[in-house]
Image 1 (cartoon, helix red, strand yellow):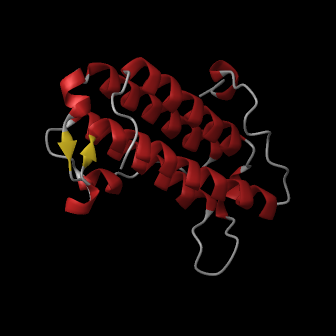
Image 2 (cartoon, rainbow, N blue to C red; image 1 turned 45 degrees about the vertical axis):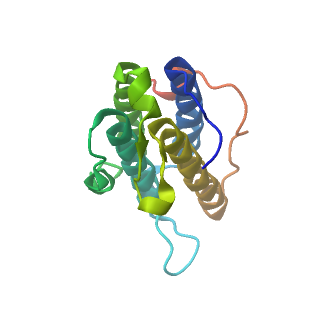
Amino acid sequence: MRGVAQVNPAGFCDDFMRQALWTARLVKSFNDDDLKVRPGEGSMTASEQIQQICASDNFTKSVLSDEQVAHSAFERQFDVSTVKAALASIKLMISEVTEAAQKATPEFWLEEIEPFGPEWRMTRGQVAYLMIDHDAHHRGQLTVYLRVAGKTPPMLYDPVNENQIFEGI
């Protein structure tokens, strides 16, 4: 993977936060019954999509904090049974990923790892940004799920106020 030669942890945290808040705003547009929606046979439910996003954020935390990248991080289970619980899980992962990113040394960000095998050799910073892209993929899927539920998705790139998104969480 090319690009992201050197990561500025504060910049990464800003990028991660913005993307996570876009996801949270989207999730907040669902109601609890909508979390069972799936666009077709064999598709994940909306709650399973949210679980996948939280689990991939947990993997990002592992990339930024563990000497050995823990693939088991994808297996961490989150409460996504209600919209409020799903938002709390997203908020938790924002906190955990941000904390890990802030604690990682510049050398740690630049360490090359092979998270998915030798053909995937890249720096921890590159993997962290790859995981932001992965979350964006699932956020796009959730946009479709909202439409299947008969709702209009919020404007994706509008500014997001963290306090409004997580009010009451």
